[in-house]
Image 1 (spheres, rainbow, N blue to C red):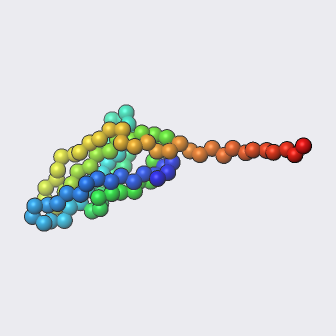
Image 2 (cartoon, rainbow, N blue to C red):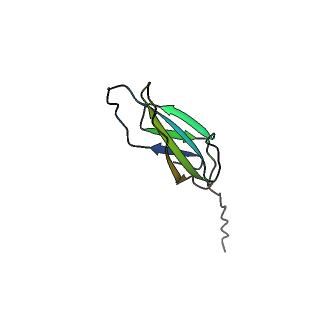
Image 3 (cartoon, rainbow, N blue to C red):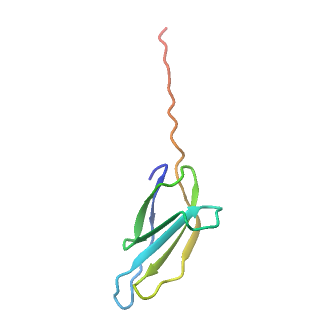
Length: 96
């Protein structure tokens, strides 16, 4: 999406009892130990994340909750890289 944002999506799950399902999403820069960078709860099967570092690779983990039970984390490493910051290059043209 951009230098400091990303859209993370996953396959939705259904609850056998028909209960609504929400998802908890956490991400971190790859190579770090703690999952404290972002923690997002949503009922959608995607999330738009902002406030990321540019030109970084991120790990993501997701788990589902139906209000009673919570799944184990589904963890993926090196999921995406944010874009590098754009550099403005000024070009000067001189007429002869």
